[in-house]
Length: 234
Ligand code: NI
Image 1: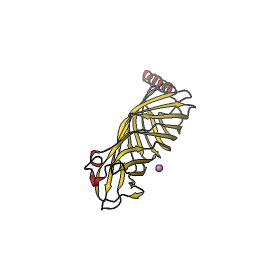
Image 2: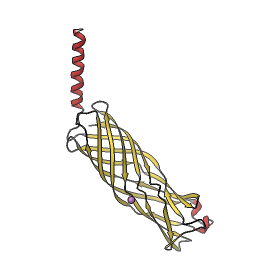
Image 3: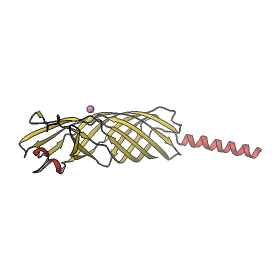
Image 4: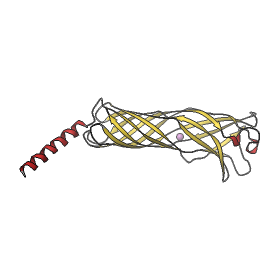
């Protein structure tokens, strides 16, 4: 009985030691890897060509951006035991673009983008807790590339004779806000989940009808970005 109590005391002492060892402190770094999902707001953007709304007979044409999941990387550096800087990076996202004419929907094209986001995080709990919820505010820069129209809307014989070409999306600066948590499994490993809103607005420009009519769409992508990951602490 006495031996059991001694063992319990030793186990408790070890547990206390390990919780001190896993406490967040200034200079710590966490690398996280996982899945990132970008779900754009469901707002539909009106398409303008030659300064006018485009109407194929079922109301103004609108465009939307579809959601995508990619491999996400995320690095955290602790400036103090509760305040950290986080960089979100990912492999390029490829989003499908859709065009809507009344209830008809067709493929407009696609664009790739990278949304690096630098955030300041504030951890809410005591630095030695296993469960570490945090809130964050950040700055996002979204780079769009490899924009292209779908076969149905470009070239001779495209829908409505539109023949769309020269799609270009303007890069975007915006603020982001997030909530998330780390759950420490031991001194080195943790699991993480986060949800953030990023203000991403872009102007898509293009040419219509054999390049003769300039067109544009102001798109508020404003996505929710969800990430689940495994982290390693250095
Ligand atoms: Ni916005």
